Image 1 (cartoon, protein in one colour):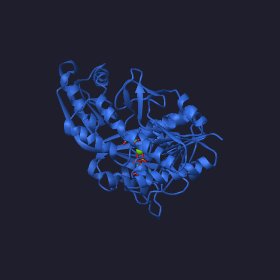
Image 2 (cartoon, helix red, strand yellow):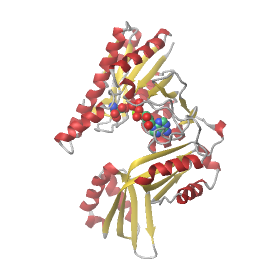
Image 3 (cartoon, rainbow, N blue to C red):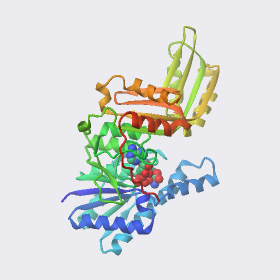
Length: 413
Ligand code: ADP
Ligand code: ASP
Ligand code: MG
């Protein structure tokens, strides 16, 4: 039988008792003859605890040392799970990212996996062991420990599944699948039986934290069969696959939100060829990720340019603009914090005009001001003041026919 990769998130391995339950699940697969590769996250909220500890020492700790610190979280859970399996009579071995051969770019905090040399994993599998790999971590060509960004254990699992040619990659989490909106915010959200890679990638990029965006990208690229399901029940989960959801005929498949949005306006730049290029190249050189861009060009020689960034990149963006004032030649910089981006996603939008207009009307009807808009073939995003996030998500969820009667079950810590 082939290899199955399973990933268990923080809540699923949050206590020793839950680790024992995860071990039971793995053993039942093992007994069916599957070769098992398991990826785990740090226990419960321990990554947050470690980051907060670092922040007590320094507001901006060194990225290298932060990676060194947070990767210890996964090292605890892999060892605990290996012990649980061994205790139950199942041969198992834990491996750190580098022991598992996961090589990444030389970037701290948000590295991409470059390659996986999986000989060591294959040798252990050949000897009948369950292999447990630390999620979220890797090693750079220089031998430095790196991390893949928050939530990155999903990506470790999918990348391992791709590299091992696994039959499937199951992501076990604290909800029973991918829902039409975050079930913690919208109680009437419904579980999707399947969703396409493209829709899932949009949802993940737009704030649906259930999957790390990069994991969906890798799954699509290598055709990994990806399933999101509950680690607390045996319910069927959500299949992420090539072309899904055709059966529903729905225009919108889901609503996502992201509460970490800030807007910057660069006022009074010269309205001439090359202005946008200068501004955004300066920001790109400083590694600032810009999202939505709006230029208001009047019949004059001045232009105002607004763009959004994630809240944690706001200080870096403002510093970069201030440091380059003369070269960029603007009059002033304005910024607004505490914004949120609310998005509707659905492959059905391509053939249905007027979806954006309907979204604007629904938000207007409940008095929500729209600060910025961005669209693609399969999504429309509106930036709104943060205090309206929940109202906006619920309003759109109802308006686009996504509500169900039963309420979603969410497992907390
Ligand atoms: P894990 O620790 O298992 O990786 P995460 O907290 O990263 O778990 O992801 C699961 C959470 O994602 C859920 O508890 C839920 O609140 C959130 N979430 C956001 N959007 C969605 C969605 N559309 N469907 C399901 N869960 C979602
Ligand atoms: N433990 C890491 C985090 O909390 C990685 C993960 O959970 O996927 O972000
Ligand atoms: Mg996660």
